[in-house]
Length: 260
View 1 (tube, helix red, strand yellow):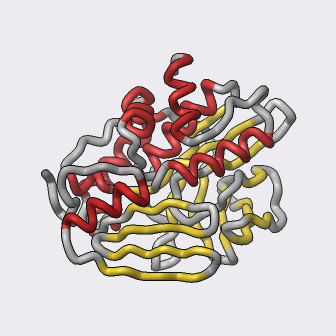
View 2 (tube, rainbow, N blue to C red):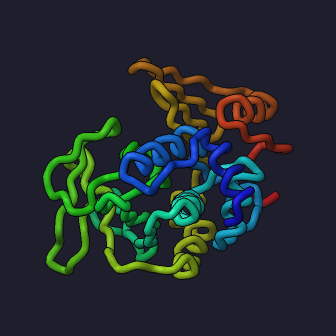
């Protein structure tokens, strides 16, 4: 990522360039990213390609001012952190489903980030409603976060079970991976009828006092603990909501199963 792209990315998330790759800087960037770049799967239902290269991911998030799902969001964020001098490794995880069992390998991408002040962190801006701040990778006690109470548990196989509010979220492998390793997982989630991403529409963004989510034509806003649900009645209202709440400008309404 060249200097102009780096500056444009920081403007996109309304963040200052940190003086050094410290834990405090990582926390600030992590929260800024969650509040600026939505978690969304619109490309799947608009027939858009999902290309897992650093150039394509940064272009989508920064130039097109879009969001994405885990591979895209954490892939782009990892590129940003690397350009700022952080030591970043991509790590794969299997997400726990309704059955209580972890899903397919490369189900999810997260980041292991080491900082100049000795920090070792699990960063994840691509798991929807999750931790708002990085989690300490080596801490096995309770970690309180604005998003909930988290714990990292060692497994006999050498993995980490990430738990939120006593509910397992995903099973994380600690071995570093390459961006290309996640292509099969991304392909599965954009094509398989068994993937929840092909069966639903979501666009969700953390706000300063809550969250806003558009699922199909259902708009849900939470502010200071107050939840409001609005059913949008037309494509025009849906497109206006994408623009107003997420800064996403579309020329047609995404629909489940739509391919453009």
